[in-house]
Length: 261
Image (cartoon, rainbow, N blue to C red; front, side, top):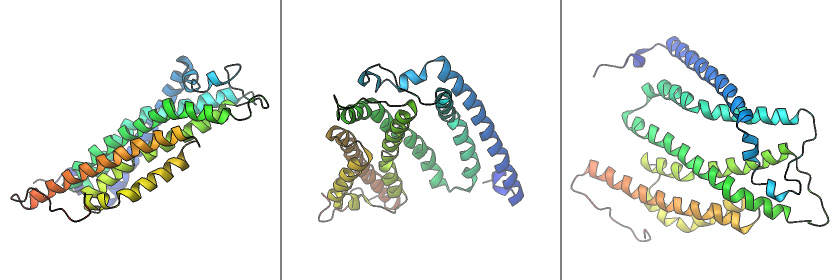
């Protein structure tokens, strides 16, 4: 096969290509930030983000302690939205830069793994924002009713909401890590089955650490995580069978060992 032109670049040419792609990414981030700020101000993004807590406040509005705080919060939200809008371009340039150095087997899993990571992160984040966050806020604000008056600033609320949302998104990447490790041969489905009980304990501990201290939030993270773990086991068996078929076409079923079921 004729080598790809990017495979024959010198070290300095690789640095020049890296510089060019970084500039493209930075330019895209700047444009995304401008668009994100415009969308945040025009389409009332802050009202959408504060929807989970507004019904729990007497005035239905969050407070702020500094004259510039509303602008800074709007700016930060616009920047975050701009980063999200720019991610497809950033991922494209990252792929174009690293693809020539990857093996064919690594290329086959890179794009599916990347897309799966985005889907899993979004799934965990949406679950956190629309389900866990409202119940967590209701749980925490239920303490001290009648004796205390909550004065919650927009900055404190967004920090709490982002922390919960990002934590859920990151934790839901765990099954993808398991599948990738199984694909490259560093982890076997037999090991996943054998240590299922240990995994349940780890999931319970993670659910207690990364969620508000109410039972509903723990279950909202723990149950989907366990289902994704079982899905990872199933995908691991599929990958293992496929690998064995490639090595020995006459071997269809995997030999089971004691404790695999």
